[in-house]
View 1 (cartoon, rainbow, N blue to C red):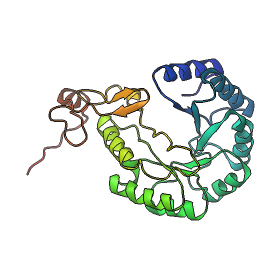
View 2: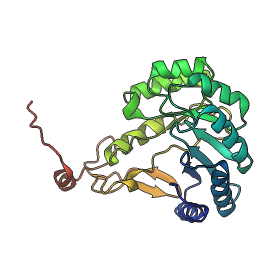
View 3: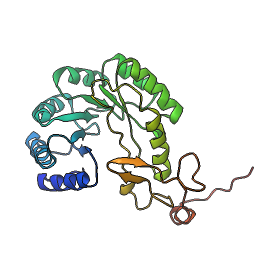
Length: 248
């Protein structure tokens, strides 16, 4: 749910719920005042009811005092977690923020590698890890991160860097492989953040990834390969910026 007023946010949330989603992520961080964020979150929570999970994504825009004030102000609306409330290099601040607020703290930009994740967990700087396979180095790297996180009872949420459908399908495969990772303080594993293809003009696939009742699966079919997708050669040609000839 992008930035906007309370009414616009509530309408966008209702549309997502009608499409079958049960977890919504609200972009935050651009509000001038805490009351602006409170009004927006209140409107969305009122619109969707108590059972839909709400997350905030701040992209590192707050400092520690601002994060403490705003998270304490919205905690009553049942926030699942807040993603990257402080700059990625402020792990000490994130650890301190965890002690000051009741909202769970998720590391996204800060969880950039296995080394970075080990440091975050050692410092007690994250309740959740939002891991992007394309950022950390692919499925094997995600699996290694998940093993380390499981030892600390910290769940891993797989997300994307706004890849095409090819990258999303790969991330979907990774997420499916992590379904048995412990959910830490969640009654059930948190939803993965993969519904980003709609932000692109085209996903480069012959058939888009299938969304049903808030769940994603690949279309499959003849020639789909291990990722369950077929790439549209026409779309690749249309949107290509450069072609590089390959040889055996």
